Every structure is written in structure tokens, then in C-alpha cells.
Image 1 (tube, rainbow, N blue to C red):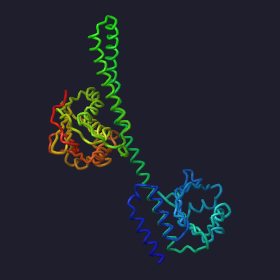
Image 2 (cartoon, helix red, strand yellow):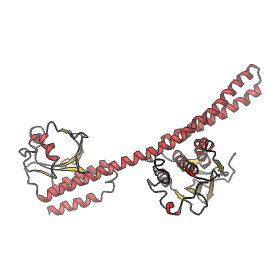
Image 3 (cartoon, rainbow, N blue to C red):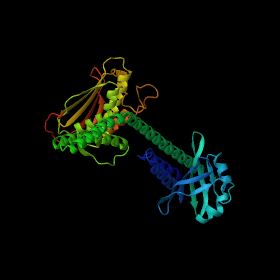
Image 4 (cartoon, one colour):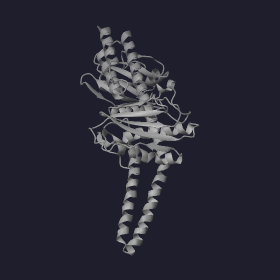
Length: 418
């Protein structure tokens, strides 16, 4: 019966869907499983500080109240014998915790006040080093911890190590995503100052001109001049809006609701951020007319991020190409209920052997140190969240990525305003 109960609880733990994605949930599952399997009042997971001088409880489950808590901290200075034993043992089975040479230090300040009589602890090891401990505590009559219960405690420690490993992988992935995102923003920022400086100079000149004409009461020309000022202010606003959208775009957060946005507006915002790089690198933009009134339900900053990433990748590919042709093409096609945004470039075509891997995380064709291999993977995740797909069209002579997204409603077929 005892072994069956332990086996059943282990199977339940292995089926937890979010075990490797949510550390808090994983630790709660471990402590509840441990308490149920060993029929003990308290089960907890503790994590060592970086200097190994303190243990902090990250999750404590109490069977009688079916509740979770955390935050208790124990120091090596107060419990040296216990800390020394953890560093050397696989399992600490203290049937009489108040008298055991490794746990007697807890008697007055911890064990007796809580009514704990027996302890079964298993150190959590990662990379051969102790990083924490899973603790099982008996309240009431003392108990003898059997060999199978000690083995079970060790298994709980292994599960805890797995949970912490998964959590660290998540943090690493998020850091790399942020680095890739900031890298894209850095490339955009390099040209933003040039983009803004030009309309600001125009605004300054026109404003001075308007003042002179106001002195001469030439009101018709003043109106024309101020119209030009407003047009350039609008241009600056588009540039700043695009930059702000990029800086706050986060593919790991989907709390922001989606709204209908025009495809031509999204493309325009992306090009506002990339135009200066295209100019500086003498890359021709081949933008086909875009249908007006074509809407998609989306988070516009994220779609702009995808377009900017693909355009930047195209610029990088063109820079490494030996061809005299330097161009990027953008074509938007509407078919039935889907809009396709196709981005092509004059760079070398991606070989068939690499085409299958190009959207995989951490895969990159760029030189060492010039790419994380996350940009296209992130872009693919964004497009999937929007109910669409991102793919490489291998039937073309040049590299051609296609973004296919459902449209909001049947649009009126109108030419895009130039």
C-alpha cells in the first residue's frame, strides 16, 4: 500500500502540464505530492543562498490546512551541523529530530514550537553541487523513515532540481530574446537621428519664414508654410511612434488586446524605422501598391517588429552578398480571407539544406557574433499568435519570406495613396 501510494503520486507529478514552464506551480506540486505520498504534515522546498550561508523556504505545504506559504529563512551560523550534513549526504533521515546529531540544533527554536518530531530531508543537487533541500516533517508521534521513503525523498529532490533547471532555461531564453530585440532597436536608432533631423530643419526654416511673412501680412503664403510645418510634425510623430512601439513590444506578453489596423499603415510604420538604413546602405526599396482599407486584427507593434526584423535580416544578407544589385521588395496580396505580405531581397537564396531550419530557435546563417538565431523564431511565434503563419517561399529565385494573416473583413479594392 505504501509503495503503491508513492508510485501513484510520482505518476501524478510527471503528468503536470506546466511543471517545466512555471516554477511556482512546479514547487507547489512537489510539496503536495511529497506530503500525500509520505502522509506527513509538512513538506517544503528550500533554496540555498549564493554564499551557501542561508536556506530560504520557497514553498511549504501543510496537509491539515491544505495551504502553501514561503519566506522562512535558516542560517548556517545558527545551524552549522545541519548545513555540514547537507553538503555530504544524499538523504538525511532523522527519526528523532530533536536528538539526531544533524538536526538537534532545530529543537528549541523550530521543532518543538511546531510539534515536529521526525525529519526526512534530501539535498537538491545541480551539477554536483547542493543548491537546496526538500524537507518532509512529521508532526505528532515519531516515525521511522523506511528505505523506500528515503528513496522517494531523493526522487522529490531530483524533481526540484529539474524545476529549477527549467526555470533557468526560461530566464536564459528570455534574456536572449531581449538581447535580440534590443539589437534590432539599436539598428533602428542608428538612423532615427538622421530621420528626425531633416524634418526638424524644415520646420525651423518654415517657422522662420512664416514669421517673416506674418510681418509682411502675406497670409496666403503663411497658410501654405504652416501646412508644410504640420506635415513634417506628422512625419516626426510617425517616427517617434514607431520607435516607442518597438521599445515596448514584448512577445512574451499577450495581455494587450488586438485591434483592427490597416496593412498599409503597418508597412509604413515599419519602413519609417528602416528607411534610413536603406538609404545609408544604398538599398533600393521596391514597394508595390498596397490596397487601401485592408485591415487585420492585431497588435500593431508586434507586426511592425516582425517586418523590421525581416527587413534588417535582408539588409544583412545584402551586405554579405557580392552582387551589385541591392534591393528589397515588398508585395502585399489579398486572397479570399487572407492577406500575404511578401518580403524579398537581392541577397543570395537560402540553400535548401538550411531552409528547413531557418525558423528554428537559435539557428542563424549570420557570421559568429552577428546574430542570436532568435529573430525569425520570435517572429514566427508572433504571427502564430495572430492566427497566421510565417514561411520561407523556396520556389522563388531570391530569398522571399511570406507573412500570411487573416483579414478582418472584405476590404474595398482601392489603390494605396502615394
